[in-house]
Every structure is written in structure tokens, then in C-alpha cells.
Image (tube, rainbow, N blue to C red):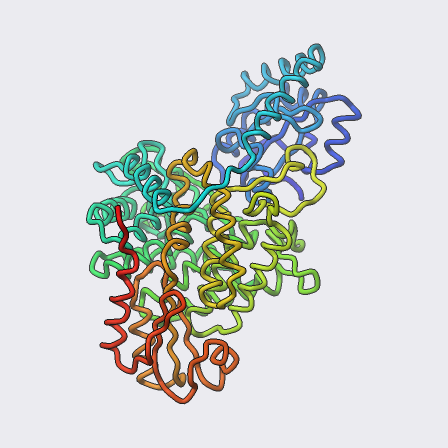
Length: 594
């Protein structure tokens, strides 16, 4: 891939950047030069600044080209590289040995400091190579020892501990978690919402309303064009970093949609519609039926009013299609479709995006799911985040009642997770397949957030398919993080949510009846109104779904709903009142001793 630089004038392309590859590392080893690794992003403001300053400085350009093998990596295209080498933000500026071990690093480095670092690291490598090599080897050995998973039993204590950590970070004055810079943290918000749905603790509703209201009312939100910026530099959500990301907006869309279902009078539907308005207008690509990855930061543009903005070109949009982010967008659109009453073109757009993933970013022969397509074909196969997000989105598609084939798609994702990424020794999933990669990518990693998403999807798939192997795989995954989840703090929110799903008995509701049958549709509407966080849904239409009907064991000649808690199902329910009582009774399964 050709590196992408700041859209403003700069000289960064005069540096002889190599792609991340075995060849680049071999070149460093043969020439005995350290590596300068730059991890950038097309949306990143300070990455652009570094291109325009340090990487446009004549002496910096000369030093890098003479003393280093420079490698440039795009964060969005190579999240696996970023996970191992990020030094605290973007841009990441990392000095490496020819074998890919970290010597020194940081984020933005101004020209004067960059000239100094380049000279010092090169001199240390020239004069004290043996000592440096020994030091980095000792660091790596300690990291290997710390990385060995410590398994344990799942319990509600895990959920309580993470909940306590989140409460401790809550900002009661301005909402959100932590001080500044303040990130929206959609996974934390979803945990808070689901905990409220499980146990109705009033302080959780307060935390949620304060945060969702403050984010949508302040500078974190684009009040003119819609959509959330990446984060706020201030505690009170007023001064944002102006990038807009598909990933965060998709996840926040789902959070606001789900919050509207739980609190229909809070006005969250306005935010849902507004985020969709921006995503449709700015990120959606009609030519490929998918969403673009991000929109660039532009401090001047975003301070303009609506009339003034119309006179200027909008900030650059990265038209690259990212598989996992499009799956998150589809899930967000389906959540919005459900929250807004199940009408309009929102569902069609979600379905189209998933179709593009299946047709353009998947190989039907090898069953490989690729990470991205920048216009020259799909690249980088079977990353954990992509498989987990597509598993979740496939289940979301199935639970609309419109896409019965999506359950088979979810099973394909689960098979890829199991066969290509499972850590068979310790449990859980690696972030990428076992493939020949240089540097720290030779050691496979197990990210807790993506493992949590995978485990949650596997639990949902097990409940809907009746195939216990997926539940066992999920439990083994979750148990493998019991020894380390505390160190992640509030970043373990998705893990705690998945543990809560694993500990609660599954709740599955099946509605059987013709597609246009008024009673079946009334029962379906009532079922979809439930906000139980562990709810799984079947909409079974005789004639269309006979195979599913036989698997579930329900008669095809009777219009009814069936509420199943664990392995016990209710008698046929043929009116909304009876269904509502059964759903209310099922909700009591969350009760537990403190």
C-alpha cells in the first residue's frame, strides 16, 4: 500500500518509506540499521502536523534516509501492528531494532527533538548494540511471562467489580467517565444501560442520562451536520478533536437507539436520526453499497455555521471500506430501525452493507473474511475484530425476522473463529491467524475487548441455534480472562457484559405465524418491545422457515409465541397479555443474592 500523507503541503513523501513487510525487516538486518516505525492515520490531525513539520524538515529527512529503514503503517489498515507498537496515541513514532523490538518511542515529536532522537538512537545502536539487545530481550521475556492467561471461574463478582470501577470513574458534574481528554466510550455506556436493564439500579439511569445528554448537547457533537467527533479535549465536552470515525459513530448509534427503547421520552430518537443523517450523507458510498471509514478533522470548517459551511469543501473522507466497521454500522442501523418502529430505508442500508461484506470482502472458496478494501482489492484476512463484529451483525440481521439465512452466516463466522483463531491451550482467540509476520507480530495477541465481542456473539448463537458447542467455546474464552480483567479497568466493560450474559439463563422467544397474520405480527411487535439484554428472537414463518420450525419443535398450524428460559419453554401464547406476563416473569431470572 502507498502511504497516505497530510492533505496539506508537506515533504514527508521524500522519506523512503517501506511497507510493513518481511522484506523491510530483512533490509534492516542486512544493513544493520534500526527501524523507524511511523503509525499514522488518514483522519489524525497530529499525524498531519508531523508530516508538515518534522517529516518535512530537511535534516530529519536526511537522517532517516541515511541512518534508518523507515516503515509507515496506517492504523486503520493494520490494527494488529498498532496493537503491539502504539506508544500512547497517533502518530506513534517508534524506534526499533532490526528484529522489531522497541528501543524508544512516543507520539508527536517536533523537529528539534526529532533530529536529536534520530542521532542519539542511531549512535546507541552503533556503539552499544549488545547492551541494547540484551535489555530489549529482558523486557520481552517479562512480557511473555505476564501474557500467560490465568483462568478462573465466572461469577457475578466480575460484573460487580467492573461496575464498581466504572462508577469510580464517573464524572457526576459533566457526565462521562474520567476527566480530560474525555472519550465517549460506547462499550462502557452499553454496559451501564444493560446493567440498568438487568437490575434497575436508579443511579445507573442517572449516569446514562447525564452522559448521553451532555455528549449530544456539547461540542463533542456536530450540531450542524450530525455525527460525533472522536473525543473531547475538555472535561465538559466542549472542545473536540474534530475527526469523525465510522467505528465510534456506529457504536454510539446503537447505544442511543437502545437507550431510546428503554427511555422513549428522553429524546434520544432525535440523536439516532441525526447520526444516520450524517452517516448517510457523508460516509455512505452508493457505488459499492458500504460505508467509508472516516472523515478528517478540520478545525476551521467545523466552527462555521450551516450557511458558511455550505460555501466550503467538507473535510476529506477516507473512502476505504473496513469490514468490521461496516458490520458495526449494520448493527447500529438495525438497532435504529428497531428503535424507530421498524420502518424506512434504514434496514435496507444495513442489509446492503452486509451484502457488500459477503460479496466483496469475503472469499467464498477459502471462507476468508478480509479486513479492508481501499479500491485495489481486499486485503488482510481473518482478523478477530472483523469476525466478531460480523458474527454480531449476522445475528442482528436474523433477529429482524427478515433474513433467515443470516443465522447460517453467523455460524460461518463462529467456525472461522474456532478453526483459525482459537487459543487451544488457554482458551480465547488470537487477534489474527498464525501467519509469517516480522517483529512483534510473530507473537500472537489476545485482546480482551474483541474476545468479549466474540464470546457474546457465540453465546447468542448458542441460544438461537441450540448448538451447545458455541456456548462452551464462549465460556472457555471468558474464563481465560478471569485472571487479568481487573487490570483493564473500565476497558473491561464489554467483557463484564459478556460474563453477565453467560451467567443469566438464556431467554429466547419464538413467534410462529404467517408473514401477514395480524396476531403473529402483534405478538412479534410485543416481543421486540422487550429490552432484556439477553433476549434472543425467532420470527418463524411456516412455508418459509420449515427447517427452523422443525429444529425448534413447534407446530406449524398454530399462530403463537413461545417463551423459553434455558431449556424450558412456555405453552403456546396466543394473546399479547399472556406473552407480556411471561416476559415479565422471565425477567426475574436476573435476581441474585448479593
